[in-house]
Length: 431
Image (tube, rainbow, N blue to C red; front, side, top):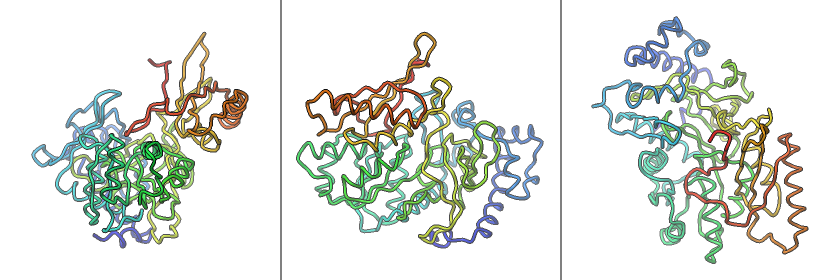
């Protein structure tokens, strides 16, 4: 694998490679995928019209609904007999999105995850415990094969059964933990409850993804376990984990640009935005055989930094995802993201990292409630202290999101823990 060479290419060489691959993938989907052939014809475009990377903005977008409308195999660019693996989303908000992999796709996937874990600091001597579910979800299998690719020893613990997870960490001398950040926080909670110090477990690195998380959550994880916590990014539709990941500098997630061509657009107008501007991340897959996607709208909000990283890599870095365009709440005309609430709470002593947002409507007016869980050791027995904490949270939330929230303090461990993505928002207006 030539990770070092590819990841340190001069910008000019990377763009030459990207253009060559962009032309090839546009030609392939035009020939092999009726959906894209129709979209391109509607746009008045043919493959020879792609002459530079600037022409990318002329291509039509692809959205998740396109995958659902072509369920299950309508967007595949190869016949079914060439596929060796199929994954799918949970389909909790509609039909699942189905993704297929050829043998070459699986090799590529392993190498891409290999890049992510190596730049995060994984070594062949590491024992890595994966606490993601295995099955149609791409997270468990994607990280599993990528970690094996770099020579690490993998413990496929899967999700749940937290006390068993702790026993495996101890018995197998696990050094790297793979999970969602919120589940890792829960592992630390359970460890303390059964008399274990999380920082004494021997873990030296955490690889976290699958849900947005803040710097405050990172600080909490690193303080609890005494390790370095790194972020990684992926999406089933694009390939799964392996699209991008942090290096040890923790200053942005390196995107594997030789496989994924990123751009940032204004989510309202669809226009491209300049480097450094925050907007919606759009990805074109450059090398996938089974399910190539042109200008896929991820709905994730971030920004791109093209400056070379101090680690020596020259690949573009994406900022940590700050929210999603489809997770955005409009409360009384104001745009609110759960990540804003999380950032406020992580700066306040006396609360745990677990919270829930409840949105409702009464007499045609939106109501916005934030349920905040008290920290395990906070309660002093004085009602006045709770009132002061509640008032502090309310004031800080209003200063950030510009609307008044009802704050409800709840007992420690009263909010649901999960090994998967944390469910932070209940919007009763759309139920």
